[in-house]
Structures are given as structure tokens and as C-alpha cells.
Length: 256
Image (cartoon, rainbow, N blue to C red):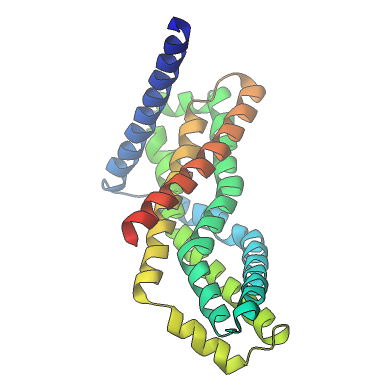
């Protein structure tokens, strides 16, 4: 019993310590954001990396999810003979949950892992130490541009994914389920509301902040050469995904 409580205590201490370090990094990033000048060239470069280069995978996932949602909704609607609810169900699902969450999970796998691998490699090769020697703060130079780009591009990608998902649902609903084009469009418009759109964007901003903060945190604390970079990258993706899903629950409970 004593060893069990020691084990619980060690893990509790470990989790609280890591949580505190992440929170400190987050507020250090915010403190540098409000202190100009900002490196606009670096921010633009990161926006291209995070946003434009993520379009193919986001497009594919959103299209497939929208089509699958329409199929599943169509089969359920046939049982109660109310095909008109399919459009609204797909639209609300994409705006409130599927659009923000799936976009964030894709970015965690692509962008979060990339940030951790890049910063981790710089850490183990002592490039970050060299920046400090040159009186350049690594957080301002490396983390802040990525954070700003991530917080800006994640909502934009979420809107894009939502539109693609609704378009996929429209294609399936009209072509396969036989729903009238006008009926589907009207159902989509009726289902959407300002609150739903606002909640989806809030989630996207929070998810973007989580992905970038965790990616930078794991990158800055990488140890152990190439093997350590691999461990940090894996841990970054897993941690980001878990936090995204946990944050989604709490945000949904708070917003609705």
C-alpha cells in the first residue's frame, strides 16, 4: 500500500510540474507577443507552413467526414422518414464539432510534430544555446511566430474544412439520397446560427494555441539526440490530441 501511494504521488508531482511548465511557457509567449516589434516575415512563413501546406490533408479529411455524416444521417432519417434533417445535422456537426476537432487533430499530427522535431533538433544540436549566447530569446524568435501563425490559421482552416464537409454532405445528400438541392441548402441555412459559428471558431483558436504550445514545449525540452527527438515528437502528438479532446468537452459544456 505504501508503494502504491508513493507511485500515485510521483505521478501527481510529475503531471503538476509538467503542467506548470507548459502554463509558464504559454504566458511567456503571450508576454513577448505584446512587446513589438514582431517578426512579420517569420510569421508569414509559418502561416504558409501551417495553413497552406495543410490544405490537402484537411480537404481530404473534411470531404470524407462530410460525406460519411450525410450517409449515416440519411440512413437514420429513412427510418423515421424525415430526410430533411440530414442537411442540418451535417451542417451543425461540421460547424460545432467535426470541423474544429478533426482539423485540430490533423494539425497536431502534421504541424505539432513538425514543430517539435524542428525545435528538438535545434536543441540537441545546441543551436538554441547559440541563440541565447547571441542574446536572442528562443521563445521570441522561435515560439512567438509559430504561435501567432497557429492561432490565426487554425480558425481559417476550420472554416475551410467546414465548407468542404458541408459540400461533401450536399453531394451525397443530393446525388445518392435523393434530397432536393434547394431543400438541402435551405436545411443547411436554417440549422446554422451565429452561436454555432462562434463556438466553432472559439474552439479552433483554443486548439491552435494548444497545438503550438505543446509542440514548442516538447521541442525546447528535448534531450538525448535523435532518439530523444523521436520520443519528444511522439509525446507532442499524443499530448496535443488528448488535450484537444479534453478541451473540446469543457468548451462544449461551457458554450452550450
